[in-house]
Image 1 (tube, rainbow, N blue to C red):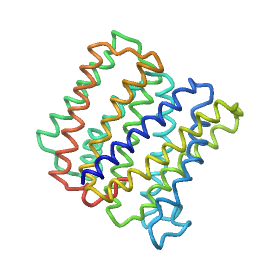
Image 2 (cartoon, rainbow, N blue to C red; image 1 turned 90 degrees about the vertical axis):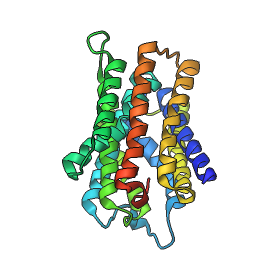
Image 3 (cartoon, rainbow, N blue to C red; image 1 turned 30 degrees about the vertical axis):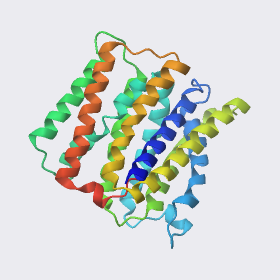
Image 4 (cartoon, rainbow, N blue to C red; image 1 turned 180 degrees about the horizontal axis):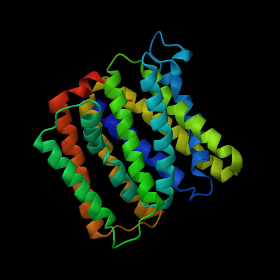
Length: 291
């Protein structure tokens, strides 16, 4: 159990470092191009994610094709929005928006799955959105494309999670991961064609770090959920905020004021509470593979 949790921390550290690599590009490579190249490099993780009996065609073929397409679309939107947000905003601020994902999962579960949500989870929803208002402070600071992209990334991630829940534990891991890679690869490839910019060696190294570390993180997350229950591993994603604050301060000159920190605490608290309640009410972590 402890080894699985530690692997979870290592996985989300790799995800955070991957995001720092793409932020270090400072927008010199268009977001959709970064996503396409990063997804292509992330395919290197496929051999490590395949179970016995899996075939390469399983990357593109799922038992429930509609949910595969939802995962692919969510991956494309989420990745492009994520890169856009990290390019324009401090890392900690982006993560605070992305960490609304459990709250968006609750809302989508009510709308799409007709699940009953009690007052405790509704309270967490309101607290989370209150935290967003504290972070964004509309009317007191300028909001832009980066904020919209970060929120859309959280919504896309929630849509992907709901698709996982609907797929249950029967879908092959390689199909679930493949959808999350093929979607960004194709969407980014199509969008980058009109304005393709050939990266220089320094940009290639940053893009390689972005894609390969994201693939490594997925492999570590797979092993973590094999050793420990996914409901124990999932909360380790919030450790990304510590990495984001550290990277933002030391490498990117980001500075967070006290109201923003207070809003981040509200969002993290609401998200963690929602994860705990989701497990107690639906037990879906036990049925669903995390990747």
